[in-house]
Image (tube, rainbow, N blue to C red; front, side, top):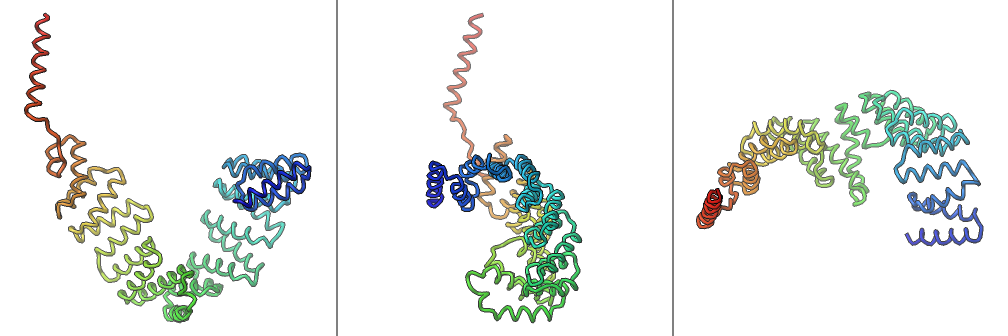
Length: 391
């Protein structure tokens, strides 16, 4: 931040001296350090206005991007392209603006134009693969990835991207012929149930001491998950659970860990634990209706499980179904007179005007004393007498 402040001062000094080119150089450096610096962008706009119309429109587009005025930014980039139609910088910016605004097919057109101009633009391939994937067009994504692999023969990144696309489309043969990453290769082999081949890779990975370093936590977690899948495939469910727990210790509970547990318990024939973990899997993914279905299955398998009842109560409340939620809070309360359940039920019935049930669940109802009531009655009687005495 101090560097940026000093650079602003230096740029201002150059402007005072009339050294506009030097000022542009310094403001450009500021934008590299702080892309959202509106002062620097505004100064660059002013400096480019009469000097370089192309850069003026590009800079004005950047100002509009910072201010999230994306349609204005799109128009500015188009004006820049009217001046320099082959500008890769402008085409890239326009493609990304279309992507941000959800115009994916227009974005595709811009990135394809980039590759027509220069087939060595790696980011254009990556953007196109992502856009085709978003548009649910796996064949097109695979086609672009193939071109990238052919163009960057020594680049393992594109080979692994292509292998992953094959894998997701269910083409394990081509995926295995293309893949170079051991983790991904083991994953493909396990999905194809080539368990022994996968285990050979896992044993090799296990020997890599670098994987156990603090900086490689994600890699180690991925290894544990692959081991879990291997033992699941082999129907050695206790060992599979052991590796899922190791994975969870590193990654914390997430949808994937709950899904793995659900599948393992399903294999073990434990209906309650399977449904219970499917419930959490869907809940984490915010698929609440499906979570309710699974927790209901778990409740039917084990009616007195308190955690399942609480999950159902909360999920129904989240869906705005208060009365259904209260039915589950009642069941929670009936197990052990749970204080939180009692408070929720008491507040609910108090709001409904059912003071008897509110009291039953522990809600304190403030009642007026007999003396206060008698005093109020006496005051009311006096008012009635005064009203009639005036007639």
